[in-house]
Image 1 (cartoon, one colour):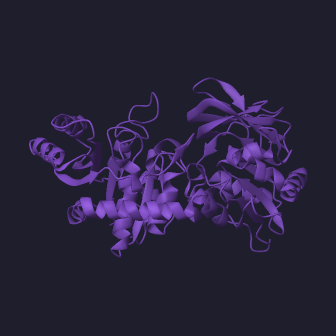
Image 2: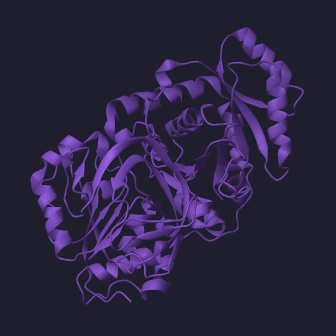
Image 3: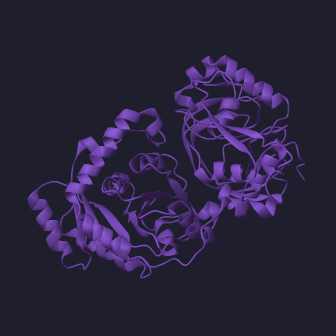
Length: 459
């Protein structure tokens, strides 16, 4: 059994990431092996979690992966750890639009049978904090709120008033944090600035968060609360077992392992750890490369995966790396499998904000004022290296860019929400789309991709 806590809040902006990351780093600093997790599709917060713990930050998304995989994926990520800290998403009870509690922090806490610590921004209230906490604690009796951490407390007098009010609520105060600029993490158009873009500053911020948490929280009480979580009685998810029914096993040993190059570096930081694990389990050799630095693809690349990130912040540098752009275009022209999501889609375009990109797709991309955000229910409208026609997948869009046209002659996905439309490109071995997917919820995607990389048939 892994001791565990869910860090939630009444709303976004209360300080969940600061508290969760600080707790992870503080407990890791005490010699505990800490497993970091994030509810929902967020890619950026897990980067800070990984920095705090030295382990991959993992997502628990009940919409994209299904409720039945939340506990197994948690067990997979937390295997061998002393403690797991799960950072929630938005407000405690906020989930997928028009889907009830689906994908909410509350639902994940129940699936994990984990106690919840509520982080409250107390900067503009005193006695009212008790009514707020009481309402959240009583809304769903299956959600166990084991304590509250008060954030952005102004003075000793303010703290006294808050503690006095909460004394009548029955929910213990497990921490009080004062306003502290040193722990702040800069944001921009899609949230926090990723760790890969500010490594030294991020290290300092995480250290400051850990110190703030150590000084302001009852660490022993928090650890005791985490250890009160009962056994989950579930088998850990396994990439080897998950992919087996779809591929009939990994690539046969008589065939060399296909080499799959996966884009990384500061421009392409959005990825789920399970993707590389599934590719490896299906028989691929996964090799990372950085489009900002490397002028060639890894030798003997058979397939290419380009995930999400911030190419719009590095358009000039990506464009300046002409040798790699040519190499990517040449690989795509051979029909080799190429899977590109969001940032990867932009990189394959003809141009991004006027700067030449790889030119694989006859489309041009640009920044936009409009934020496109939300879960997507998708169906494959054409056969591709990722899915056969008619295959259903759930995904997520999150971008402030536009690509024109929005779909190729052969589109990637048909979307049903929030409006019916087709989007993305299927072109030879290329599958490019704005939709982020989580392959743990559809392991046949990785198996199909690797089979194609190995030169096998794609039915």
